[in-house]
Image (cartoon, rainbow, N blue to C red; front, side, top):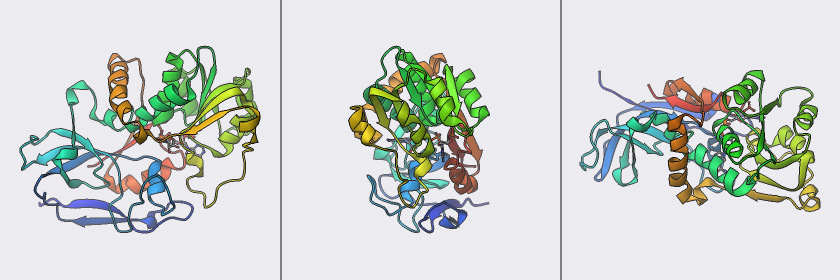
Length: 333
Ligand SMILES: NC(=O)c1ccc[n+]([C@@H]2O[C@H](COP(=O)([O-])OP(=O)(O)OC[C@H]3O[C@@H](n4cnc5c(N)ncnc54)[C@H](OP(=O)(O)O)[C@@H]3O)[C@@H](O)[C@H]2O)c1
C-alpha cells in the first residue's frame, strides 16, 4: 500500500473557543524533496498553548498560520531519505515540521538528536522549548532567593513542572498551582514541591493564602485569569513576576478586566514579559544543565502522549481546557 501524507490544516480562525470546525484533515501524496531537502517521517508532534495565538490574525510576536496552511508545530522525526547525504535514513531530527505525517525540509535547518542520551520526546518538552522557557523565566526573571516563596501556575505542565524544580534547587520554598486533586498530588509527590493548591477548589484564594503565609516573593505566571487574580494580592513588596503566558485567557475574545495593576506601582514590582526565542543561547545552556539532571533522574518530567495525528485537534482543544497531564505530545502513527 502506498503511503499518503496526512496533514492538519487551519480551516478557519477561531473567535473564542477552538473547535473541530477550525481544522481540516487532508490526505495527499508524500512531499518530494527539492534540492537541499530531506524527506522526514514525523514521529512525535509537540502541541503547545502558543499555537492558539498562531490560529489568530491578531498582532503578535509571530506571524499567524495562513488559512489552508499546515498547522505549525515542532516535531521529532526520522529521516526517510536525504539526497544531500548529510543524514542517514533513520536518523532522528528536531524541527518545526508541522502537524503532518511527512515533511520535506532543508537539511541545513535540522538538528540531529541522539536517541542514546534519552527519550527523543524530551527534545519537545523537558529539554526543549518548554524546559528552556522554565530555565530563563526562573533564573533570569523570577530569580527566587533562598527561603523566598516561589509560586508557579500550571505546575504539573511542561513549563511549570520544570520551573518549580529549578526554583527548589535555588533554595526557594515552592508552591504549585494546578487543576484538580490528581495534578496537585503529582506536583507534591512526584515533583517534590512542598505544596500545591487546586485552582478548581471553590475556596482557592483562601487556600492559596494559607499555603503562602509569608506572601509571594516570586511568581511564574503561566495562566492568568482567576489564578492571577488570587495571586496578585499576595505578592510581597519588591516581588517579581515572570510573565510567561496566560493560557486561561487565550480563548477570550477581549482581555478580561483587572487585576488592578496599580499594585505594580504601589509595591514596586518588576513585571517583565519575555519570549524564549529572544534567548537563543539558553537552549544549549539548558540542554547541558537540564540534560544532566534528567539523566541522573533528579529532574522529573511527565509526558502526555496521544496516539494518532488525527487526534491532534481534539488534544489541542483539551490543552486549552487543562485536559492534558504533562507535556502534550502527539505520537504520529
Ligand atoms: N513566553 C514563552 O516563551 C513561552 C514558552 C512556552 C510556553 N509559554 C506559556 O507557558 C504556559 C504553560 O505552557 P505549557 O507548554 O507548560 O502548557 P501545559 O502547562 O503543559 O498545559 C497547559 C495547562 O494550562 C492550564 N490551563 C489551561 N487552561 C486553564 C484555565 N482556563 N485556567 C487555569 N489553568 C488552565 C492547565 O493546567 P491545570 O489543569 O493545572 O490548570 C493545562 O494543563 C502557557 O501560558 C504558555 O503559553 C510561554
